Length: 122
Image (cartoon, rainbow, N blue to C red; front, side):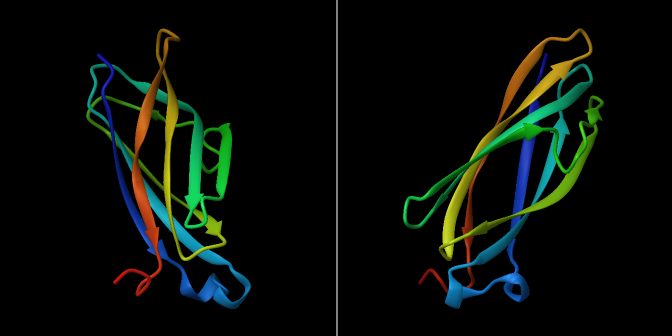
């Protein structure tokens, strides 16, 4: 059985952001845990990033941060990446395409998560 759980933590990167020029930088750390019964390899990612003006960036590509890790049952893989938006708040969601040892592919949804500059929400 394929069961992959995703946890996300985000952080606003003030020192790389330039609010006067509509540039807001965030990092996100993803922890991928294989709670299934067989190894699963992360093949590709698909992100949908929506800013506060409903501007959408769609990102697709192989692996994450240049890697296509295989995650054994009961183990986790963690990585950090980033995104630049034109507004101080936004949301991200998406999916990973995973592959079993036998070559079967399955999608793992990444839950929506918010990107919020400190002080942007009251």
